[in-house]
Length: 68
Image (cartoon, rainbow, N blue to C red; front, top):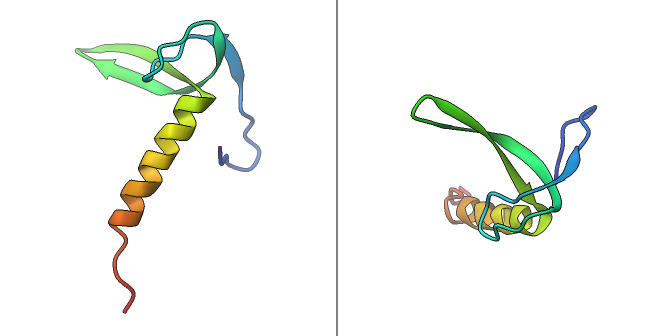
């Protein structure tokens, strides 16, 4: 994953909140989920993050403006 200079990735053992729903695996915090005034920490494993990154890249490539 690309990170900002001076920032470290902090992987912990936990549950993936994305598609695989695996438990007890290395995960990283993606950010807070807000719903109905409540907050929950969202974590994801590397395979799910890789899939999410590929999906985002495909989205960005489809919407790239044509070169002039």
